[in-house]
Amino acid sequence: MNSQNGWSVVGKTACDQGPFHGVTFPNGILAGDVAMIARWQLHHYAASVEPIHGGQCWGWYVKKIEGSSTFSNHASATAWDINAQLHPMGSPARHSLNTRQVAAARAIVRAAGGVLRWGGDYKGRPDPMHWEINASPAAAHKLATKIIQEACNRVPNTGAAIAVDGVYGPHTTAKVRRVQTHFGIGVDGLAGPITQEKIEAYL
Image 1: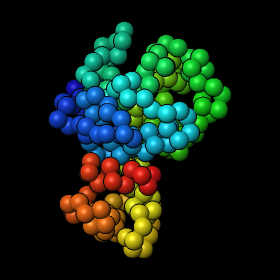
Image 2 (image 1 turned 90 degrees about the vertical axis):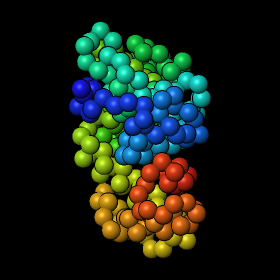
Image 3 (image 1 turned 30 degrees about the horizontal axis):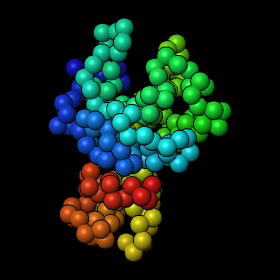
């Protein structure tokens, strides 16, 4: 079974439970690349759009799109909702966000290079709380790798910067190992949930 964006429907055990930008997203967000992209998106959303409120954010949940037989992207844990009480489904983004905030949300979409879609731009029934992956796993992996590379390059005292090319090769693995050593966490060269949380401050 696949969700609307073509990703496989998953169970809760496939999800990173966070926190994400200090907030719990009940049931989590798909571990790995999607969680890294979500951390990056939430960091920029909080910095440029509005604060993120605990108790109003949602992640994985197996359900169909309302009025449809298609699984929502929440079912593949590739979608998350932000400040749901402020931005109800069906309400245009301009009703709860000002012009600057809408522009900032769209700037995040552009910076993601086609990997993210914002429900505030849906045609028909808007959903301004909603963010989702709108690309293949390969495209998501490339974006997540670029995010990791940029963040790791900003961590002090971890050696020379590496090229930000979206390729998780030996140079990236070595850099992630140095970052993990710096933070005193398990050193495996993989940017899993613990490593992602540590580098979140450098997004």
